[in-house]
Image 1 (cartoon, rainbow over the protein chains, first blue to last red):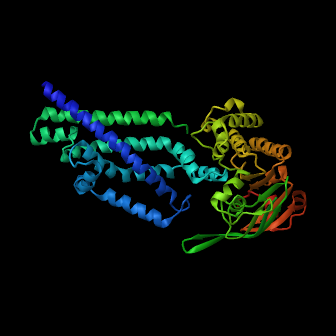
Image 2 (image 1 turned 60 degrees about the vertical axis):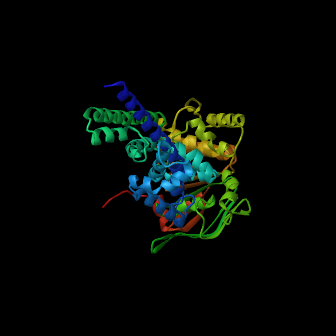
Image 3 (image 1 turned 45 degrees about the vertical axis):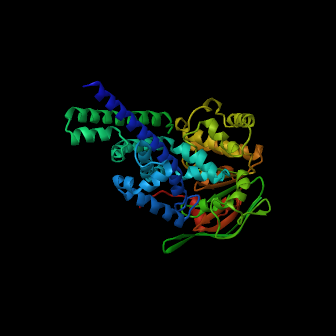
Length: 217
Length: 248
């Protein structure tokens, strides 16, 4: 294996990690509040509001139905307006974040549904505002589950980021495609696969450790 | 201190209504340990929740300290709720917070300073006799200890009223006794009015000075505990007083 190949793989790994973690962060920035609102507007919850819940759920479902590779293309005008370009890593992070955000929202909603209703009721009985309940009850109580959701999202994004190659964002997935599928270089393809597996295992391992550390149940 | 006047609560579920409370009128005096007893599904949990508006009555009035509260907004209710402590059958402690943090929780909600919170919480830990568990998480506590923490948390904001929703139903008889004696001490030493919901006659007998019997959303009997117990009038009260577990 030449030095160029090693360099290529190192660069690909770096790009995959940057895309995964940056879009993971942004998908949570969008998905976490969205998931909280989805939860709070449900029936019998603090901000019960059937129409608001339906509208948000509608958009979440629409974005979750669009295949990711099509989302990238469909979003090009928006991506260009937002980051000034439609090619490269920066451009891939936009659809990656938007694509994962509705997924995160649903995961967050499910995490919050696991909290026993009595705990929320107890906080209400103590005169907590909705904002206080979100910050001091919902998030801390569901933190272990939220961390597991973050691992799940990041692992999904590792896979999605392979498609970032379509807009020239690089990454391991793209190398695997170029050298493996197009050029049929079995060695590089297999190294790419091993690297992707290692990244996924690493995320899962760290996620599990962190989730256990904050779980006092 | 607490007055309920003609309180009705109707739950609307798909295609059917459940009339959980029917014209409930109660007058709870300052210093009372007021017991409300009834079978499951009788409406007693709904009833206690109308006192702090966790459940809003469909009609009728709820008066706390001469102030009618049934039309207040959630924000207007916040300061009133802080003066009404509540404990629950399943304790409802924060699993992610230590004993200390759980007791300090209502004080943090009220935005008090760190020193005040520390001082107050330490006093309460002393009251419930759990100083050595201060840094433990609820998962490491027994049922009785969890309920003690819940009581301390309910007392943190110096309430005038303490609502107890089946607060001993998940506990064994010995632990029940210790929790009841703590409640009695709170009632006499801190002069806190207690409203206690239960299906256990022994609990009422042990601590309540007044009792209301509720069945199917209706208060069927009400009065001094000793009077009601010595001469029960309604069939429900008689049955509650003389429970039989004989299965035929």
